[in-house]
Structure formats: C-alpha cells, structure tokens
Length: 324
Image (cartoon, rainbow, N blue to C red; front, side, top):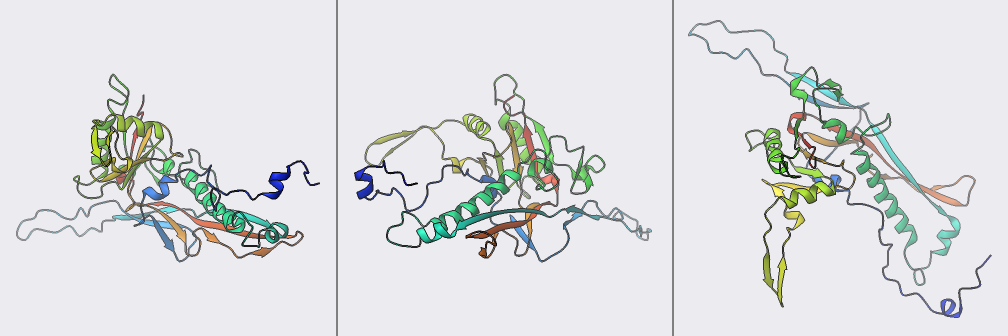
C-alpha cells in the first residue's frame, strides 16, 4: 500500500541530490591491499591444484679452502625445497529484480545509477572480505592463510606452508617484544628498528615494503616522533604540529594502519617474498548476468580463487606488546 502521508511539497518538488552516487558509510581503508604495493603484490598462475614456492634453504657446503692438489668434496648437497599453499575461494552475488531494473532504466529522473552502484558495492564488499581474511586469527578450512598465521609471535612452533618452523630455523619470521620500560610506547621505536634490520639483509637488501598496525598503535608510534610545528603563510599564518600520515616512514618503509589488523602489533611485510597468488581469470572476476530460474530477477557473481604465498619468512617481522 502506498504511503499517502508524505505531504504536498514532497509530492511535487524534486529532491536536491548531494551526490550522484551513494556515499560510503561502511567500507574501511583496505590498507593491506594497498600496502603491499602494485609491484609483486599479486601474481597469477595459469593452473594447478595448489600454489607452490621454491625455497632455497642451505649453502653448498662443498666449498672449502684446499691445498694445491687437495681433494674436493663431491657430495651432492640438497639446498632446495618448497612451501605449498591451498587455493581458497571468495565469492559473492548481487541480485536485481526486474521491477527495480525497470524503475531505474530512465536517465533523466533517477537519482543514481542503481545498477552500477550495486555492482560497485559488490566489488568493494568483495575486497573488504579479502582484507578481513588477511588478518584472520583462526583461519578455518575455507579461509585464506592469513598474514596473522604466516607472521607469528612464536615462529619456532607450528607448520606454515607445509614447513615446520620448530624444525627449521630458516623458516621463521623475525619477532620482538616491545613491552614498555617505564612509559607506554617508550620501547616501541627501538624494537621496531631492531626488527626492521633483522628483516633486511645488511640493512640494504630485502628491506620491508611496508609496516602495518592498528589505529591505536599507529597513534602511539607517531606520538614517539619529535613534534615539529610548521608555519605557512598562504593567506594567513597556520600552525601544523602533526606529520603527514603518508610521510610516516622508516628508511623508506611506509607505515600505516589497517582497521582489520590485530591490536597492539606491528607487521613488517615484503612483497618480494609475500604475495597473493590467484588462478588466471580468478581475480575479482565479475560473472555474466544470469536470469533467475523461478524469480523475476537477474544475478551476477564475483569471485577470487587464490591465497597468500610465502617464499621466505625470515624477511617478515612482528613487533608485539606495543602498548603493554
């Protein structure tokens, strides 16, 4: 039944639209997907049952100093293995009824392009799922292998990618406790610096790509930085006692927060050894429009088939107990 109590003005006057598309009130920054960067963040695979990363874990120990006619070591030395990662599926749907499609088919009177807006919401919701999955603390059978489960607080325990960190020291991420000495966050910068250096090689190669934390820890870290009050004079004097968030870096490593990241921790990532691999044609793929069988409506699907793949945990780091 129609609501006949809207009033004459509403019935006769067009609404003034603030925007031609819906204003997002729910999707967060999805910072992790941005943080690993466009280069090396995603990698496609043409097929296969699972994803595999070749791991170099040992030196060729036949190398030695010998005398002029000394005997060389001719033993075969194994130096390669592999980590293995299951393929996971993330998917969603959006439904359009025939009625709503007919109602918004005009281009003059409609407030927004409803069809396009719902498809965009489906896409953003899909990435929101993948971002949340990236930080899952207890991944289930169908869940992504999360960053949380790859970079662990105790890397000497547990199997990651099919390799047991308790048996192989080379398959352990860096981890350090930032518990305060006397005042909250007073040990954070020193611990972060130590972990950053441990993740790199000589402080020059394999440097972390980005550091991701939660909002409270990001605020605490920035609070440990020296406040510089800057004055500018475009049209009048202005004071800015804060840092541009995009400018908060450590030796070129960008530092930012993700709303989905675990609290009280800082993760150091490197997109040379940690990537999201997906099957070719299976990255946020939007399926064709399908007619509903027993309804007046149409359906579209979106799906991703992939998972995080790690080739070297030693270049990944974790700073924990940041605010303890």
